[in-house]
Amino acid sequence: MKKVLITGAAGFLGSHLTDRFLKEGYYVIGMDNFITGDKKNIQHLEENPNFEFIEHDVTKYISIDGDLDYILHFASPASPIDYLKIPIQTLKVGSLGTHNLLGLAKDKKARILIASTSEIYGDPLVHPQTEDYYGNVNTIGPRGVYDESKRFQESITMAYHRFHGVETRIVRIFNTYGPRMRLNDGRVIPAFMGQALRGEDLTIFGDGSQTRSFCYVDDEVDGIYRLLLSDYAYPVNIGNPNEITIKDFAEEIIKLTGTKQKVIYQDLPVNDPMQRQPDISLAKKLLGWEPKVDRAEGMKITYEYFKSLTEEELYKSEHKDFSSYTTK
Image: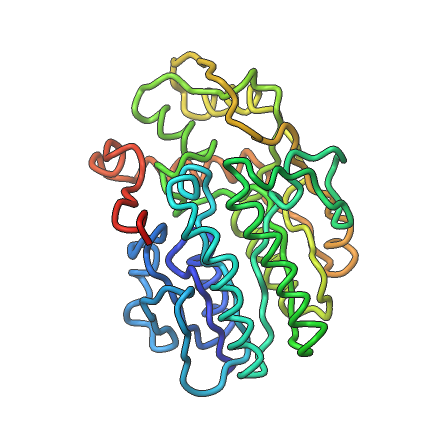
């Protein structure tokens, strides 16, 4: 039985990856410090003999007993609201955390897959975004703590690949959605659905002409799984190229939820990208992968998940409390 370490295992994507690898017959070690992860996401695995969990901050020294075949590094805040509140932790998990995990991969002779992001491209001047586009990123802007942590993460990963011969994989993840997203994480899908369920007006930042491309979580996980098992060491876009404006997307949510709210507009955040659409030609060619779940189907499943939340979860504090981490 092959053994895989998944950091950020209690997060949205990390928990779905954990499920996939267990289903594929792996022994999974999950690691998380619950800054943005949720114990509820892995509760169903407590009795699984092929799963063990370690509560740990990956920016600290990491020790794993025995052999290790694969490492997937998914520990990081991924929502602007999160990483703007804990900017130092965000930078540290992308730098120190990645360094620690690459060292572990080197020591264990394990293959490591790093979770990068479409934020690598910043507010892109090339559309759609291909892997050979270097991006348009403001290093000192408020979003720079996330963007640059991921850019550094890619650089140190390739350095370990070239200098130490570590088997590395890099996935550039585009907007992903599905069950287990945090309702209060500030991203557009949980924000719209949460507002609809609470009877609030839907808030659009800017004029709504900015675009996003949404990939259902099962498709995203399948692409990541295929990339890990491939022979390709360089970054690969995994996302859904079906692009939509935020204004049109809000109308889709209103139709899906059957709500009567109106759409209101607020100022666009600094450096918020105006376009986001992956070119997935490389993933199609290398991995034989492309998304299968259309947005209407995926959104219906996601909405049913949010509808199942308790009243307390639906109306609790607007955003996660990071007060215990802000001085670290």
